[in-house]
Image (cartoon, rainbow over all chains, first blue to last red; front, side, top):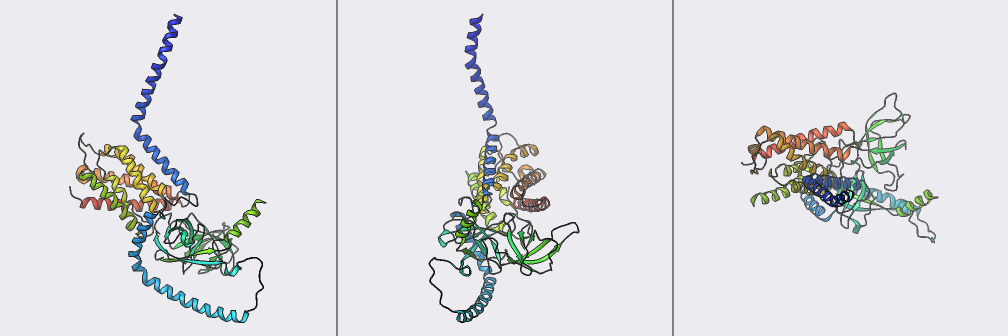
Length: 301
Length: 165
């Protein structure tokens, strides 16, 4: 009896396990589509999560070569219709610059003095910004997460984190760079907040887009004791290393405050019209690395 | 196989039309119709499910790369491809062995409209919520979902009513 039982157990074990295996395989085959579905959805979610990183892979963005070549081609057609407005802007800016040049030259003549030889190479604060001109080859305004693709990239000296401006004002911040193209997160993408301040009173706050209309954004963190007026001009605060101080951001279109609120709700009309955006300048802040290193060092200590 | 060729051409045309034309439509600021989902809706009824899932994933990634949001589009499109079979079984009774392409003629007008409305709405809900649930208030997303779905549905029904039997 005992031996019989023992034998039975011994034999039944592999048989039983084989049946289990068969069940398992049947189960897998029966639900293979569900598993494939779940697998693909998990990949998608991983992509979304990865995409939250500031700098993501170039391959999966519109700066990859196939997508950007296509956009460049399509832009060459569309751009034709924007030429007139772009020309007007350029000539206006040209005149302003010429005036400024004359003024500066006069100042320079009166101020000229011999500068001492410096031991260390140093970029003086007033010369630490350079501009890299670039063309917008793709720009969406009707999505919640809008992005802009530019026709210049690492070869032209563009790096992630650089600020982007147009003749009218602040556009956004460079996100990804490939050799010939780059992708910019514009202000009209709720993923970034631009630090800006009032030209009149110097109070600063963060500008955030609410995902609705590409012409307006909201300004937060302005306390109720600050005096405001409709039409007040907002400029960049210069508190981040991305934008120098004083680049126009927009004007106050409307503001509200309830008696119980500590902060204003301010609606800002953006200086840049993203629907007609065609030419931009990328800001190369030459002391960027030094400032970052110093700030990092002092945080560590 | 004319159906295969027809679907390849449809895939390319819909991606190009979506990326180069529809993504640039500026109407009320809210509306971004996603017509490309028509590719999944118009796959023949008996397309193997695993194959339509893979196609959906490829389609979503292609569209997503061009708008810098690959995961969101892939997720929503795969979801639609997965839900499609159930919806077809729910509203139509297609005989075994038949493999029609979904349209007004093969499904019947009311069944086809229901099929399009439900799947487009599903696609838009998944897409818009994934895109912005942490950034933007729910009401704005809801408005966007409703308006974009409406325009997409009208476009698909419009395109389909012109297509031949």
